[in-house]
Amino acid sequence: MGTRLVLVLAVLLSGWAQAAGVPAPPFAVPVDQEGVQRAGIQLDSYAYVPSHLIVQAGKPVELTLTSVTFIIPHNFILLEPSAGLTIEQDIGAGKTVIVKFTPTKPGLYLFYCDKKLPFFPSHREKGMEGRLEVRS
Figure (cartoon, rainbow, N blue to C red):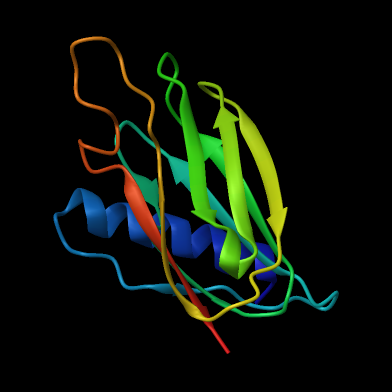
């Protein structure tokens, strides 16, 4: 099965599981023929799908972040400089952005959206966060 088809199926199944209230299992990001770990993440109202990715340390990662909202902008923040992870990327409503990085240190790192309207909780406070699990 092609890498892109596997990624699409993982995103669809994760979305279905989350919509049904079932915690989605972690998604182990495959390493492609070029040695890059590629995955797609959908940014919805207050969720990342999938919300838990497993990658390998020392190998490049390329995440395609797609906002499926039509009005609300999001972002993807992952700040762990000691592990080679310093990402602050805005994703406009209905837009797609690609982020590239190489994690250097095994661990479990949180990513989140900190967008917020005045007088309302932030997207993160509403549950818009996920986990990047880096393995050796």
